[in-house]
Length: 308
Image (cartoon, helix red, strand yellow):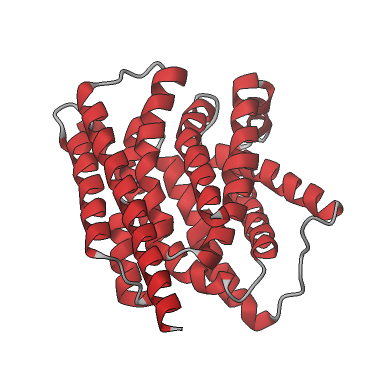
């Protein structure tokens, strides 16, 4: 129950994060936004560590290989591809593309983790996918000039799938909060190294810090660095310990709905009928997957009691 609640909170935060990425990109490019975002996240990690809410454990040299490999998928490539892609894509498009991850994740979960889903869950996923496809393929829904950005967003989705596949096993071996702190720290080093190096080589290091003087940019990186980077990482790592990979990813189907609504409220994007229809299909599919998951579990528990 707590794991599913955590995933629901993650879904809301992630859905709105697309809005704040677009706000941040108004004042800085993707690389600088990533650097400042993870600086905020790293500061929060240090604060939590100073109050002994999290610990940096001693990691054996052989374990660093696995941790660095997971960190490459998430958060480095995941957020890297996402932010670069959103330079030429809208918040609504980003949410829609990210919601495609359950299709890839269920296939990967079945192939590599041997996870099983019921027929009704598969139908629910298909219904959600049809809703997404309707939004995605509707005339005028995707602008042809943003294909490069969309490609980066798709790569980010694939990184999510890789993270789910590898991270689930890793979370069962390590403390999730400690691992999250390490992953955030690695991202802080990587993105700041990239951002600062770019400005040093061009001789305009002062422009690296200028966006922080803009209130809208500061609000953006605070949201992205605290809620979208740290809080979601903690909640996702916690959920991966208890929830099947396919169930974790199905929540992503709600992201386009949240992104569309957020785009209308914060970015003055237009809300079209085809988006409402597609969003209804997405929500229906999610409800269907969760309902039949719980129903199957209840039946299984009853059978276990009967046989015991």
